[in-house]
Length: 559
Image 1 (cartoon, rainbow, N blue to C red):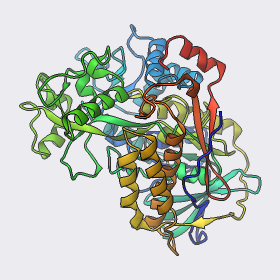
Image 2: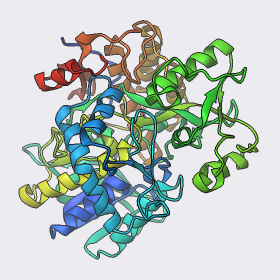
Image 3: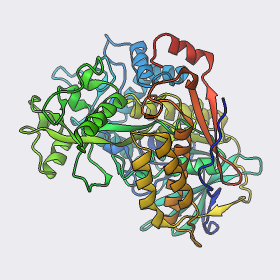
Image 4: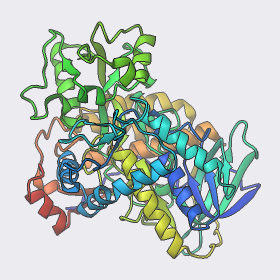
């Protein structure tokens, strides 16, 4: 099956001046969350020099916002096979079996390595790790820190480890622009622009024998998201401009329970971790009645797409814009969920006395730049790790707390590859356009189109409206580029690619919900891949699952 959709005409290179300065290292890592920092540390352990580029400060990415924890098989009564089964069930038949096998078997050791670096997770009185459950898990296998401050602790430990290593050259306040390519198409480094209070002004270049993208997600293409402001899809856009294949972009996970702050709230919204439901909280409708009972065997701990859809159906039926989460039965709320409690109280809500208003918000991109199980993209010398990558682990929907684990596992694998297969420094070749940058004023229209038509509820008509709106916005270029114009160009690039994939997949699966195609269709068991053609148009293609993946589906994964 092959499909083709042209959504917009997009730049193949960002419009920017030539590099006025340069640095060089064996490896350039772009991004400073768990995936980027762990990759940098693995590269350093092999004796490689590293330039680490981050968009704002080292701690301003998505990792520190992670509340739930890290999933790994640490309980003797749990098994990797059980973790794999839960992952495949959440991925609704589209997880790559090899990638999942790597994740669940290598995950526990990578988590132990993180603890050896100094990450301190919550423990029981007897000293054992305190494990909890989250949505989609049939066992307690989630480690957490500070109750709901797991991301803060992980970021602290990795940041401390990076600062101890003089072999990491850190460039903060730097927006990565484009991949530098050799004449034969190999990654040779990146161009970047140091922003604000950066140590070096203007456009420059980092020359490197390998480039690792760990730039996080793309939640800012929506008006309401749990993602920080830096999550603008820069890595996916850069990779696509360089010729890399993106996959599974249509599968954007909407977290079922972001804190509802009122009808005018936009941008990053506080997250109400499903770990709260793991400890006994439950969802209720406007009548105060539980509505997840009977929808799924795991009720309020069903996979995120199931819960988000159920909440959306209740809101549509009641004509409201939120439901409520009743956590009044949890006795140690302040100890277990200090960050959530602070967010609620800042909004005038006291969870010990009243239910918490919640609604779905854009949360996690299950797709990204397609990689193999060693983190390699389709561009030689370019690797991707974390949310920017599509390893195949998540399929059509990410299982809760598998994201931090994925960053740990595949960072280690990239480090192993770099220690063995690092090519000589390639000479960057002159770039071939088309060059461009878009008018920053299009951002409001872009997020409105995505939030209205390409969010949790999708249809052929709505997707076509979004595609047309994005295509029109792509014509509004500016004469000179700059940080705001470059960022909105990245946003439009990933939004257009996501919309093209969503138009192509005419079924409902995981977190891709087509109202006009409400059932899963076995003929769509495979990946939709999106590429950016030489003329700036988007092309989509369908790649069916191989036989091993179909075997996993046949063994019971929902299709």
